[in-house]
Image 1 (cartoon, helix red, strand yellow):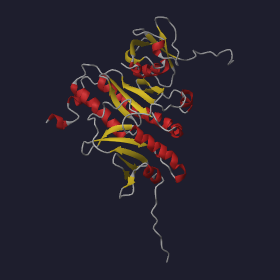
Image 2: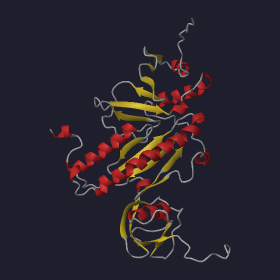
Image 3: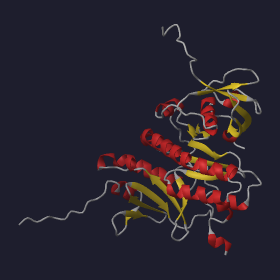
Image 4: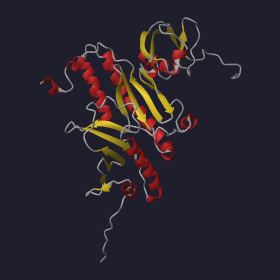
Length: 262
Length: 94
């Protein structure tokens, strides 16, 4: 008769997280300190800020903030959550690259307050361009084309695509509501990408890697830009339709939130 | 308005004069090649043909790789052409 000894496996991110003051919870898959929590789900690592977010609008005040923090809506209870998602390849598979993850977690914590390290410098633009395929920031989807931008400056590394270049002032309120619903839903569904209203009339999608440790940027930049391209390619046509092409569409003459009409 | 969202508008006609589209809110920063493809798509022109834009004001073909806003002003009429060899072979190919 053979016996199998049960050995508790400690995940490779345990030591780096504990070093930063996050303690494992009872369920062994989540960590928390007073300010922040961490959980691995579907291979992705998600940090979540504890407490109620200051902003009540997931589409306002988030663009231009450092790091991958963004507001998502919990569909079950409507509560806003502030999360920072890390792709699976950034999580350590073994203890040998735990140091790298500690630097990543440090970045997450440092940007949780909405400010980047002003002394941080991104890699040279030529190096960043080498990591991306040619024309990575030009997107053409059917009838719609968009040019993105890389904002690479001291303290800042942001990839940005305009989704809507101008929301007409006279866009009917219900169409605005549908547009907001589309944008918020897209932001909730897709990790890393932040969508927001810039001023009164523009909508942008961004991946912000400001302050990221250089040792992960060669991996994170292509993942971030690919994800951004995917999200923009999915949202740009329906957004364009809602803004410019939906006149006379009766399906859009009812609110996307029926409860708001009660 | 952010620089990335600066736009121009123009009327584009295909070379046969069959289709005309009003292109509005075209980002100035977009390479002309990407704009040509989106206009071809709006006109339901074949997507397996490379398309080029020509300014009807100057008769100059726009450079695919250069931002359209650096090559035309707003309201410049544009013609879209298939970028094809019209029969024959070049001397090098013979």
